[in-house]
Image 1 (cartoon, rainbow over the protein chains, first blue to last red):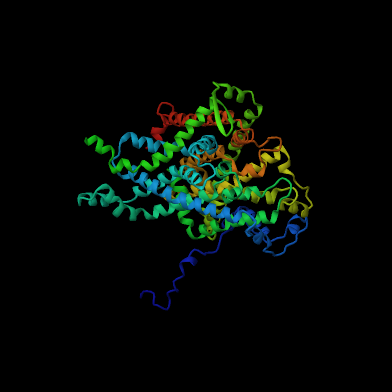
Image 2 (cartoon, helix red, strand yellow):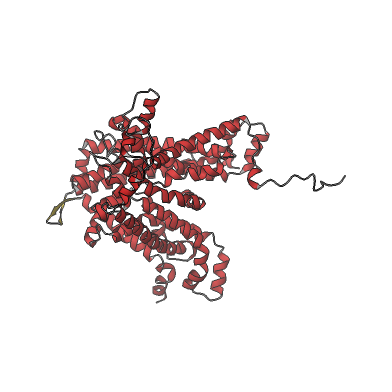
Length: 294
Length: 304
């Protein structure tokens, strides 16, 4: 009765293969159904990316013909078109919103989670975090429009950064509050016993610890801002003042639609985000579900 | 003095950026909406000219068939998209949980529709549904089936925006329900399996009841998202044909920015928010009633 000798022990299967047992009937049915669903959810996006490389003639033709051309991409990137400026606008708006929203949500989330703050102030902040996401943005548009006219910010990037920050701030604050909740309270107590002020505890202890939550929050904010359309549409006059999402919409003209270029600019807006999602899917999912469930 | 200093302590001051942005700008803007709703507004020489209107704007809404229609069609849109996307989301979550080979990749791939810009979503579906160049008609013709013109007919366009919205947001319902499903207590499920319950019985009698809180939460979130919907329809149908897909948001934009009827547009905004608040209050009231022991004496016994 000896134990298994090294000869008889099977080589350890790599972790990925452990689960690859043979599939039972109902199991493979389940895999097939899921694969079908995945095709339905991805095919429309892939079709647009495919059309990016087709000529308009091939797209309009009723038969199936495929070529490969980069003409559409070159066309929308040419200096005559506003899309370069619009892409830069979008990047500037995203950067500004992520920074502003990051600062405001981290500070507010810290107070909500960790500090003994004025009770009424707490109700006010928590209440607006709960109510603002329920309001349709369109219902606020008339008010924002007038406010921006009064402050002279209508049509400016600053105005759009402010509005995007406002729209994302309640959710971001909630995410940051949850992030601070997860830090063990002992650390904060230790710092305050050692005589650190609230501000000092915040900057030297809490901020480094909450960095992962801040990255998640910033990712979600960045994606939402990059995709934002309504404020860009209503608060700018189009052309080179607007973000990329509005530029895309302006390509759909009633009479002459440049289908290939339309697909190309759509891909331009989508592919960066899809690449980010491949790298950071865990974070995005965590941000989307964590904030929503609570 | 101490009270004064406490008010300006870091704990309170740190909410200042939030308060300036949300209460300051958004709150101020909302007050403007309410004031405009009760005003007649004209632009003369680049300046707004305000005059009090009383309830005129709201009476105008009551008398506008398109306004009433837009509320009704939004209700239909919300009901259809919520039911479909939550049902498909539950199905996908159960499939992914059972799947061995596709579980990881599904989570990444199913994220894609949800993070694509809504404008691009409508563009993607324009490339599919367009009667002239859409791939759907190419497919139908290849299969010798009659071609479709959904975007050109009233019912078809409504069907199309529901389809697009469900495609766009089902990934979110999937993610929420799947997260809840992974967090379920495995013991009850294991026990049921040991007692010989079939997979369907496990789903029907164990998993779905345990998932109910997550499902209801998802329904709530999706319903609010449905009321907010704007971007996809703006490009895909522009509210047409014959205003058949004029959701509340599209109606507000049209009145405020195309017809420059500021008072009416703001009044409709206020009305939308009031109706939404009433609906949410109703949901909360029903939930509170169902939780109270008065209406549900069995609950005590069940929970023990």
